[in-house]
Structure formats: C-alpha cells, structure tokens
Length: 294
Length: 245
Image (cartoon, rainbow over all chains, first blue to last red; front, side, top):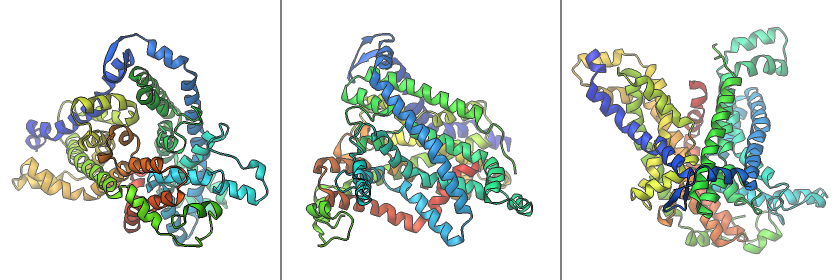
C-alpha cells in the first residue's frame, strides 16, 4: 500500500492542477494588489511609485469613513438583530408539526435562491414612494407623515438596504440553526422535561449552549457576507443619494472603476482585508473556543 | 403587477388587474435578451461545477490519503481561500484577465469562479474522504488496479452524495453571483442573468413597472422550477456545512 499512496507522479497529477488554479487566481493577485496600492495607476499603466500616498488619501477621505460606518452598521444589525431572529425562528420551527416544518423550511430557503437582482428590485417596489407597500400601509392607517422616500432619504437609506439584505438571508440562517438543533440528542430534552423546564428554560439552558459550533459557523458566514455587501447597494441606490449609502466594497468599486484610480482602489482593498482578518481573529478568539461533543 | 398596464400600476398597485395585460411579457422579452443571459448563467455555473469538482476532489483525495511532505502546508494554503473574499482582488483579477486575453470570454469568469470555489469544496470533500474505509483501496489494489483506475472507478462513485451536495452549493453561488460578473463581464454578450437583468431595469427606466415585474417573473421561473423538484436536496446541501464541522 505504501507504493500506492506514495506514488510521486500520482501525487503531482492529483494535486498540481488544483493548486495551480488556486494560486493563479486567489493567492497571486494579492501581490500585484499590494504593488498597485503603492503606485499611481489609472487602470492601464502605472505612473510610478508614490509610497503611502494612496493610503493617506484613502484615510483622509470622509467618504471612506462613511462607507465604513455603513458597512459596520450592516454587520452590526445583521449579527445583533438578524441572527437572534433567525435563532428564535429556528427554535419555534423545532416545536412545530411535520407539515408546518416543511412549509417553514421551503419558505426559508426560497428568498436565498432567488437572484439578488430580483430581490433588490422587489424591495425597490416595496419602498416606492407613491404606491409602494410600506407607504401605502402607513397612509392606510393614517400615518401620512411617516410615509417618506425611503431610498432617497439619507436618514433611512442604509437601514432600508439592510432590511432587504436581512430579509433575504434570515430564513437561510434560521435553517442552519435548525439543522444544528436537530443534531442535539433528544435525551437532553427528556431530562429537561422531567425536571419541568418550559420552552424558554430549555432553549436558554440547553439548546443555545449546545448550539455553539453552528452559531459560530453562522456568525462567520453572516459577518463576512455583510462585510462585503455590494449587490444590494448597487441595485437599490447605486450608493446614493450622493455617496450616503456606499459600503467599503462599493467605495472600492467607485474609486477603481468610476474614478479610474486603481491605486486608491487597491489601498482600500488592502485595508478591507485587514479589517476582515481582525474580525475573523476576534470571532475565533472570543466565540465558542471549545468544541461541543455530544 | 406584471399583468397591469403602466398607468394601472400607479392607480391600483395591489389589487388584481382590472384588465389583464399580457404585452408586458412580450415587451420585456423583446428588449430583455433572457435566453442569452440564461444560457450564459448556465455556462458559468456548469463549467465552474465541472472544473471545481474535478480538480477539487483530486486534491482532496491526495490530501487525505497520500503521503507527501508538503501535505500539511498545502492544506493550510488552500484554507486561506476561505479568508480572502473574491471582491478584494477584483482589481488585479481584471488586469490579469485583460493581459491573458480572457476579457470578453466566458473563461475570464469561469477560472476565477472555480479558483474561489475550490477552498470550500476541497475542505468538505477532504472531511468526507477521511470517513471512507481504507479497505476500499486495498481491495482495488490487490485486484490490480492502479491508482488512477482506483480513484475514478471506485472512489468517485462512492462519494457521489458529497459531490451532489457540492454541485448544488456551487450552482447556487455562481448562478446568483453578482460582483465579479458585474465587473469582469463588461461585454453584453457574456453577461449572466443577475447583471443582465439589472441592465434591463436601468435601460427601460424606473416607471415601467409592468415590464419590470414581467422580467422579474421570467428570471425567477427557472429557479422556482428547480427548487420545486429538488427542494430537499437544496436544503440539505445548504446546511451541510453547518454540521459537517
């Protein structure tokens, strides 16, 4: 068997193509990225190295900071509001009969499989100022004063986009939590029932602590997903009105492809990678450090 | 909404249409090259699935079974892909595809898609291979199969369920991918549905809600049909990552 597993040629044939493809398109691009971030570059040719000037320009740009605030608003809302709602939905789902469960499952995945473009456009219709769902409802119950142009008002635009984004993935996250809940052995619950614990006590004391691994997985997915939010913003507002609703990735896109400044674009990308790394390390350090074994 | 005339949308947005208007669909189809975008989307997803699963499963097998020096290194190297979001390297990717002459071709998107799909595919299949008994290969070896025959005739058929899961996952990701396609597929001929639909919305203007609704329905139909037949599969695939760890 050693000859079998130690066959050098086979190892090369099996591993090389994948590693080559991965290196060429995932790892290698990071190097030109770092180089370009120190250059003045209009997208076609470099105009010499300028040291840290791109980084200074980015960090001095108030729009960049605004885009960071927006991005972290989206991340915070989706982790602090979205995930608890998903968890609650999953806990409720676990208590239902088979048919309700089927329906729950089917409808929770559905928004996530539809195209982002369709979802975002649907939310544009919901926010439509004249006949959109929200304003019509507000007018219907006599709150005409609250009806506003959700996507053109700088106070509401980021929240409006976040709501659309959350709505698309809340069901999927609930389903992930639910899969985790199903994996918990039933004996734990039997013991709790004998001790007379109700829904809230069982959930708080048994389900949620045992759900650590899944929670961490969902948390990482959700944080990284909302960090790199671009599509909903592009489709719903194109970063507008003005530059109010830009996210970091949108700002990168704007700098590189609308303002033709690849240097600053790459600098933003590098800063963004660092932000993501810090967040990932933070989550790994403080959330669910021990693996749960059943 | 997709059955209403332009003005009726404004007068009566929610009720059933007073007059059923079907020309929104024909109007939308006239200006919205649905079939081309759909076939592009399918080309991207299917080719990415084939490349990623073919290369990824071989690497995963190699990592989990064979003995070589840089195994541990290769494992952590490929895991790095989970931390680098594709959006970040978009600028070098654009320059690279331009220099390699891939701009304006389907390959210019398929290769980055496959490369970025590799990490999670390899890690998941790796876990799956670890669970397979070694006796499978020992038996094949005794019967005189060489490693390639063993792999393609014996091992691959055994891991079919994991491969099916990966197919669903990659398909969903690529079919709905927006950012890379938005930037790398600048030519209308190679745009996938997500981006093509947005361009259609932009080109017909914001007030033509009847046609917008029609285009939305047309675009969603294939997905809805796929989902109706395979919802169990899709749900299992989407949640596979959560419990596998």
